[in-house]
Image 1 (cartoon, rainbow, N blue to C red):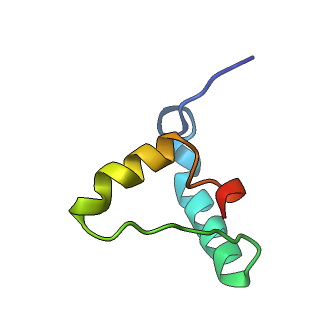
Image 2: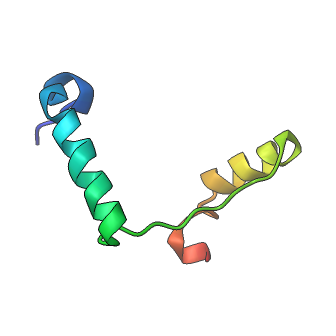
Length: 60
């Protein structure tokens, strides 16, 4: 097993990666879901929910 830090070990690829990822997002090849917690009042519940996995795909 070999660990790496993307911004340290592969920083020279960051611009290429951002270009490719942006292209894939625009083409619909990468899709994502998001959950939005509205306001600071919702922050504690959102954080706890994240730790409990309530923001994962399985909870949608």
